[in-house]
Image (tube, rainbow, N blue to C red; front, side, top):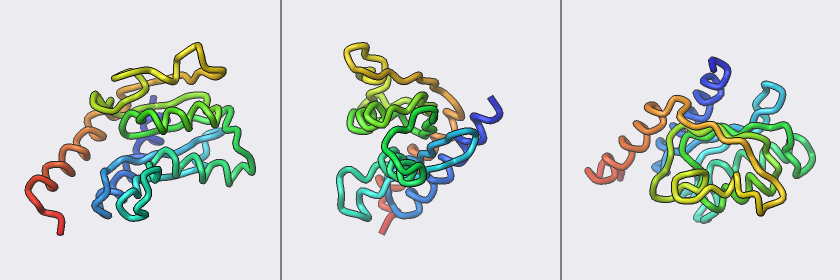
Length: 154
């Protein structure tokens, strides 16, 4: 569990980068053989691109690192449960396991609203672990949306 917490702390650092850019604070890292090979944080507002989610950014970096699209034997650590788009990218890249900090009851596609990662109708399923550093991951989101409501962002 210590190793998983260490990688989730790295995802939280990515989420903090998003927070500081006034982006929804979600961060992700892709790990293979206990080494981070991809990092990402939300950049939708910055890039003006709807698919610039943390998971997508981390997956793209990992694919570039490995020189291919298959991320078998990789684990994705993400601070907030992936949405349907990101769950689809996880399946398409053949990621073996996803470790989630906090669940997203409004948009989550890994167990909250639906569970795309364990749907046997797809040709790939992904192991899911949830609740790793849940409080820390959830707190970042709460702080961000509180600041948004209080109009602390310029």
